[in-house]
Image 1 (spheres, rainbow, N blue to C red):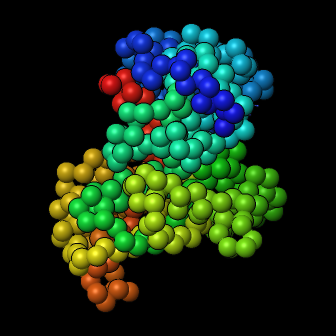
Image 2 (image 1 turned 180 degrees about the vertical axis):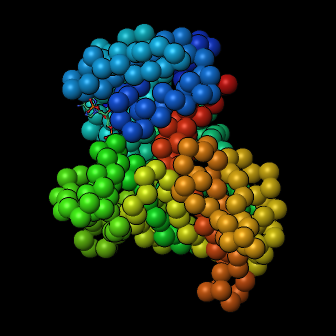
Length: 354
Ligand code: A2P
């Protein structure tokens, strides 16, 4: 984190000075960066100027935005002059190194990395769930882990009605969470497999075609949980405002390009029925019910990909809990949209509306 987040607090603005901010995207050439560009364009974000930043490797390339080709520039500490909003998506190391420079230049940073998510003075925000947290910040807003963002859209309407007492999640996570190179590895290794050729993985630790494996984040040997699982536990608690919520989780990488699935079992104090859950979801923002038992039609990555809404279905009593206080769900959301770029742009829209 910027070592002097506190020192810079008095010098930065917590709101935009202008209704048409100048925007920079850090990591514009990456899987999330490209989606950030498309979200800004699709949602008519009222920007006055757009600066695209990436590594020296990409300097000079162009990316399309609103009918124009915009040149990508090499990121440096001077990149943020005149920038009001900096959307970071180039990994934690880059965020830790450059967010401070952006804040000092007067920008508000929305950071898609895990660098600041647990900092007490950095709001961790899913607009449908806890936009009130945006009222107080010091120039950096954290965009949550993709599983945490997608899961909390589905959990918040239930948690508001009756606080969740226990949560169990098993994830089915797409390649996109590991970046554009991992998506390419899934395509290439699948094509090689179908040609009957061997393929040496370069990005992910195990063969990806027609396979699945435990999430590739670093493993905590003592607890047996990997870094992804530990992030989701901490972030779901923080976003829901439920610091002590017991959460069990298993994160698995599956050969899907860009939408994460998650099977969740949610336990409450009181008995709950699938009908009550459907009622609570009827007007819930950011989600769509896909729950047709007769047609065996439930959320799928192929239908969630490219969609802004999180798909929720398979709503049923959890037969593993004879008290009737637990509900089982299956939730799928586009990792690059609600899990990353869309949520970041929604945060920026909320800041603009303040
Ligand atoms: P580049 O394409 O020039 O390497 P992904 O998550 O899809 O792997 O994308 C990572 C993003 O972070 C890319 O836009 C990448 O730019 C950018 N990036 C990686 N390293 C740096 C760096 N040292 N400075 C600036 N941007 C970087």
